[in-house]
Image (cartoon, rainbow, N blue to C red; front, side, top):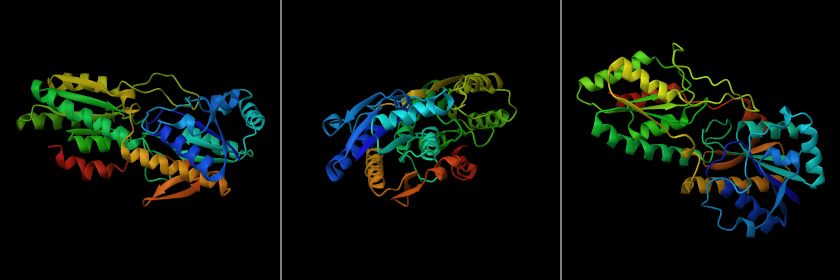
Length: 343
């Protein structure tokens, strides 16, 4: 079978491990011919491909990023994009397509599946916000990177008696902020799921200082919003999937904390550091399991599905279930677990 592979959306540790697994399993077990589309759905639209075989995939298991490149291109937002994509798939004789991506990439895959494309999805996002799977590869690596950063910020905060705001990724879901904040011993964790009251945050920091703890780490997800709306960050720029470009809440939060409390405050924005570099062993294994399961689903004819992790087993779920709603953090996780250590 001639199988196409693409990676879409933001890059993520573990993407190359998935590609490697799809290629090895497909070529060795099924005799497949595999083709990679360059830069996600853009490559499908433009018909830009590269051969994928075992030789092309040697040494890529520990590498971050993706050898196929990626983009946030949406065929449904480009005039003639869908028709071009379908024509390209036909021209390259693609009998099945493995799409590796998050909500947006897999949403396009599902819509193309309704138009006859035989597609299997693999869940990818460091935000861990895809429904129908317990965890996505890349999340573990992002949390570890953020936790390592918070550990380092503690020492400099303590040396200068400062409040340090650490901004992490998380547009609509605060999984990275919650897990890294708990693991790193943060004084406050602010997530998109629950608007925060800036004065409550400042009161908590004041109590810590009164108790003799003069250094505090505040972890905030990039999509966190203040209850009053006074610190909202809006760039006004949208990508092809209609998402607003975020970033900057950390800087505004640090300035507001210093203005209200008088405590010297600084900000560290981790940004794309969370996406790059070597995936953890856990993410390499999970990504490999997903890749193997994806090509097996192709040969079982289980299309318009996504491979997912359930109770440590890889299962197949409808793509529609995976992209229908975002998986967000239950605020109780912050209140019941993290807040016990905020004092």
